[in-house]
Image (cartoon, rainbow, N blue to C red; front, side, top):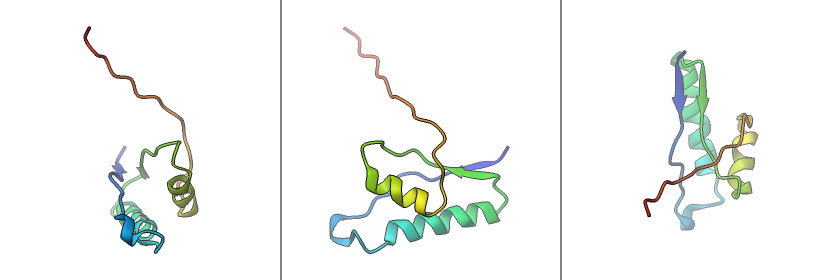
Length: 74
């Protein structure tokens, strides 16, 4: 199975709300699929509804929620 991960999507504050991240994420995802990847995926923060809405608007679908744990030695 070939897959492609979209990672580290960030827009500087002074450039936000212009659609740059949406357009770039959509273009990169489409290019990866056109190059033969079976699917693209990304991780997003559940506490960031704005980015989650962007990703669903461009065609991503939620698959599952996950939790991150850290082991800290005493």
